[in-house]
Image (cartoon, rainbow, N blue to C red; front, side):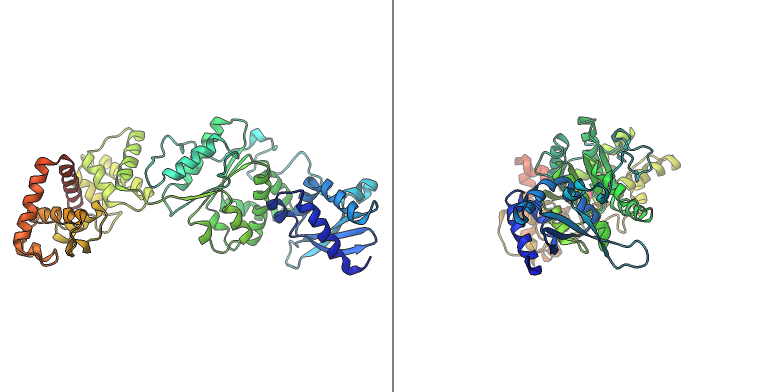
Length: 477
């Protein structure tokens, strides 16, 4: 058979294989294979790694055997050329040749495949690898019970609960949670892990950071135990990998995780990942890995709104068995709006300061402590600050207050802003009108009277005004 026909033979094999495996498995395990030699009835194919070879022999040996026999006859055989990496200073890859399982069956001396023994080295340094001995590495304090739900995290929390109820059995596999630092990603995914352990005590759940995973892999390479490392992670029923963005530009780590990911996913195991950004925005990552991150559900955690921040503080207070005046809690929630860790840290600092100074926690003390967390703890009572707070409450642009638009929501916000400008500042009616697009003093008087009249007749409107007044108060202490 001509040398150039090896490609044709392999193409014919692929056409048969394609009809017998699902498209994703075909793309993962057969497209990377390259035919390198055809001599008599032996086809040699090159595979990218030892692990790749072992996977083919374990999962597709019968299919490969039947396909080769069909193409090359009853004497047809398959051999592998495996690309290997040196562990020393020489970085040049080399290959080893391994006969297929059918050839080894005829001659046991040819069996050079890795024989996985009963004892696999555990990278978490736990003696004797038995599933019941695998420590989940989860923090038991992170649960759904103390994870406050809000608009900022409702989808992610709901998806996490669905996964916890049926790990590996939903379309949320992998489940990827992404968002900025301090928004509760680690808490949420560990809550999922803890709930799975409670629901399914026999499942092996493991939480690990990407940095720790990388260091374990480096140690495994140094100790020539890379196969043990891979085999350990393939035993997991649920793998939770935190901060996967730290894999950026670490090609070998990405490669080994790619194979672990494929094994777990195809075995119906659950993968849960976190990142500081969406998969499409991750840099320094292999496309084949990014495509797998997108297989399931990717959902973000957003900045918590004011009500959610208050609820988080109240949850922490309840857990610690303490009480603070409502206005102090709202003051903290108002001034820290970007990071849950800082929010809880501010509360802890206030409590510590209260204990050490033996003072009652009030707004004055809270304002003093908060200077360590934010540059400007309070806003000066001014027309601009009133406009800003009112517009933030109604979610409209400040510039609209100065425009000629007569939209109901804008007119309402403008009238309330004028009302508080007259009530809380010492500016003249003319000056107030200038801040609202050059309106005259009669417009200001009319707006203030309208607000007062509506507060007497419209309970909902009165609630708006009272809430805004409270926000102005706690922001200008």
